[in-house]
Image 1 (cartoon, rainbow, N blue to C red):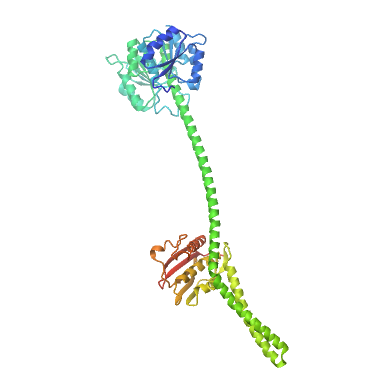
Image 2 (cartoon, helix red, strand yellow):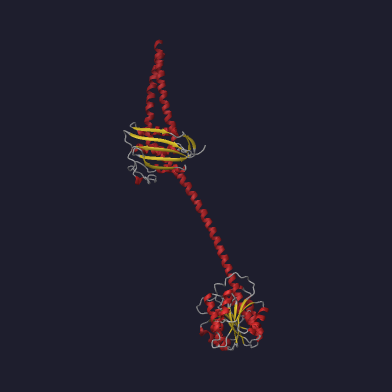
Length: 553
């Protein structure tokens, strides 16, 4: 089909004189014309591009026009290409052969230019598509015809002829019955008898207006009293696709109707195949889209899994880093705690050495007293060593990076935390423990080592150095285990409580905190399936509440 706004046609005519006359009479009326001399050249041209209309001479050198049309009708690409056949022969047998070969219309070469152009425009008009042309009708079916005819005799005649052809025929006698029949279901062709009044083509005009507005794709064949040039021009102008004389030879009447119906069914089949192909393309596009979406989803899931794994690794590193940072703050106090018993041990060790040496060298009555003194000092040394050992054990327990849940002794773990925080808490702050829950809890050691230590350390930073109070309590139900840390410090303003668990948020002075402690504590508690909240304590300070689901051993 040409992209030119003017309709394009291919003329197949071996006579230069006839071709020149055709071009001179047709081109000025709004057509773009190309010409070939033979059917073989036309096939080559059609392989390159399709015109809007093919005008072919019946008599050609080599392959005749009807043979060319038969080849075109066997090819899907050109099956519905409108074909107008020209001939200088007047015999009806030539017309029958041309129409039976698949031509859409047949006109003699001596026809006037106006009538020829009307025929061509009617064929071009037939290529329009209606919204119902892509339906799901099967490829082989009986044609649905509607005969609108006042004469009962002529209706009976055509009913017999068309029924014998295998067509399904509906009958109407006037415009109202015709429109009612069209409303009952689609038809392929309307055979409209023309009246005898001034507006003989009135019914044809109404039928054409209806199919234009409704989108129905039926053909219209006007059955006129005669088929003179004026009548044919009037019928084509009114919207008829063909005009046939009622008095025509019955065989030629059937040939003309058969050609019209064949053209309509071919267009329906082409539309059906095109709709099927579009459906296949939509299905393929949908399948491709689903495959691409599945691949994109899989890639996104892989990315999320990698990001989640990296997040978990980063979180573990942050937890351990925060632990190490906390240990760094405690190093001085822990060193002091170890140095005191160590100095005590070294001093008593020297006393023991002197007592033992004196007992060995002195008189017998002094040996017993000196050995008793040495034994007393050894007991003190043992006490100091046990204290150092206890500190080391608690330090090792605290510094473990252990994410797996174990059965933990909560009071013992909290006691270890308080021992390590002893230098930070100081002697002026009272730490009260009220353990009302069962001592054991299945959880990660980080829940106590990191979370509780962070809460107690924060409390130690804000309570008064003298008179400060920190209260640690536990409670339990059948479903949850609660740990609460309260203090008598200044508390946390209500407007900041929602932000205290945000990473890097801190109320401490610059350099005094990383802002990660509570964020990591929040993550650890959430990893246990629990919750951590902050509110106001009984003594006006902060109250942090941890709730952990109880796991069965």
